[in-house]
Length: 357
Image (cartoon, rainbow, N blue to C red):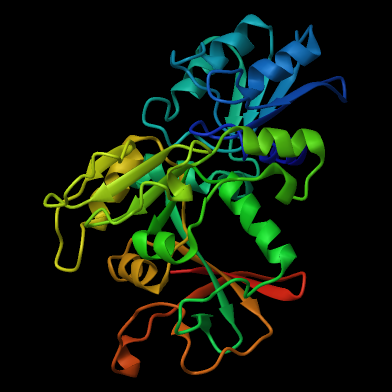
């Protein structure tokens, strides 16, 4: 099962919106086939492993997620395992998808296959947190990526912000992008940085084959732009990746703007960001990365829409006039926001904090 989990992680940049799953087939004490989820519309992990094995009669399948039992773009993996003569299936976790939710295991058992579930379950769930979140609560995992100085500043008062962190941290961010279904930013960031928000194979720091797989599917770029101030020539509107412009009902749409748009209802402060997250869930977005300035990130936090902060801290000082990490006007210690440190590691010359809300 540990090997199956390793395989599952190999699909984290390409399997979405499907969960990335790993499968190992073993017989007589040795591995006879293994596989992981291919890009959407391609084979699931179990089919890849069966093809690699050739003959799987009498084998045990170790799979990180319950085999599916329904017809989607591919046939049910539970049926394929039965047809192949697999006699035992060990799943790490039950599928949180209500279309499956135990039905795959039940199908296997009804066919006489010894089907069990729960081996390394917590580890398996950590591999696909965004998919689990979307299945259980109706929206994916939302993480805000932020870069700051040692004194908690993200840009100079003039807006200058490139570069706070070093090359290793920026390479790490490219991998965060590659593992995301959507990248959300605000029009202020677009105007200040003219960012492209794409995954660039040369900057991933991977071998050529892995980099090609990770950059083949570009995440959806989402710009929160209430009054449609994004210039028609902005890099975020180029053909490098799909883009969704989110604006208010009263925004005037320029004739030159040829891009998909989404009208969001008004909220007390700006646009209804919960409606945006609902729209991204409807698009099957499991992992949502926020790369924005302090205002949008702060608004998402105040709305209870952030699950994690991924903060890169550089060993530099930017001074008291520079912009803060988040626009979060708190007045008393009783209003402070508690965070749980999930991970802390050095990335090049910088430090990366992964913090749960």
